[in-house]
Length: 321
Ligand code: BTN
Image (cartoon, rainbow, N blue to C red; front, side, top):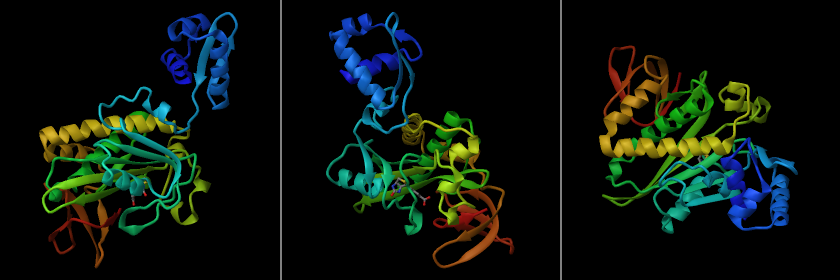
C-alpha cells in the first residue's frame, strides 16, 4: 500500500492529493494512509501534510531502492529484472553469477557500495557508498562472440548521451569507452563476455559513474584524473533519475545497433568523442607509443598516425590525451 500511495504522490508531484482521493482509489482508511505517509517521511521523502488539502510530495530521497527505480522507468526490457543491494563486492561479479543462473536479457544489478569494484585491465575501481552509481547490465545479444566488443561502443554512446541529457554537461567519450568532463574521468565501463566458440552466453556491461563525490572524496592518486558530475556541474544529481535515463538510452542504442548495424553506432560515437584529432599516448601490454588519433575503423580500432607517417591500428589499450 505504501508503494501505491507513493505512486499517487509521484504522479502528482508538487500538487496536493487529498486523503479522500487516496482512500477512495486504494480502498484504505485515512489512518492507514497517515501511517504510511509517516513511514515514507522516515525513509527521507519530504511530504507536506495539510488537514484541508491532503498530502503533497516535495522531494524524493536519493536512495537506490527497487521501487524508486521501477517508478517511471521508461524501458521495455532493461531493468525489468532488477537486483538492488546496499553493498556487494562487485556488481559485475554478481551480474555474471545471476546470468550463469539464468537471469534474463536486460537484468540489472545495482549497489550503493562496492567493496572490490573492478576496472579495466585489472585495476581497482573506488566505489564508496551514497555518492556514485555502480551497476551492471546483463545482455544476451544474438551475435557471434567476435562481435561482442562492438557493445563497448554501444554502451559508451548510450551513457554519454544520457549524462548529457540528464545533466546538460558536455561530457565526451575517450576511446574506447571512458566518459570525460574537461579531460577528467567521470565514468568507466567494464564489459565482460561469456561465450562458446560460436555463441554468446551473455555479456555484462558494468558502469561506474562518479556522481556526487566532492573532490576530497577521491583517493589522492585519482584527484588529478577523476572528477564527479557534481563537481563538474556544481550541483548534486539524483542517482536514481540518472540510472533510469541511462537504461533508457542503452535500450535505445542497443536497438539501433541490432536494426541498423555497427556503422550507425560508430557515427554516434564519432559525434561524441574528444579523442579524434588529438595527440595521444597509447599504452598496450607490451609497448607505449605516441601519435595523432585520426579515426576509428569499421571494427572500432583506433587509427593512430605515428611520427614516421605510418598509421597503426589499436585494438586494445589505454589512451592518454
Ligand atoms: C574502467 O574504466 O576501468 C572501468 C570501470 C568500471 C566500474 C564499474 S562499477 C560497476 C561495475 N562493477 C565493477 O566491479 N566494475 C564496474
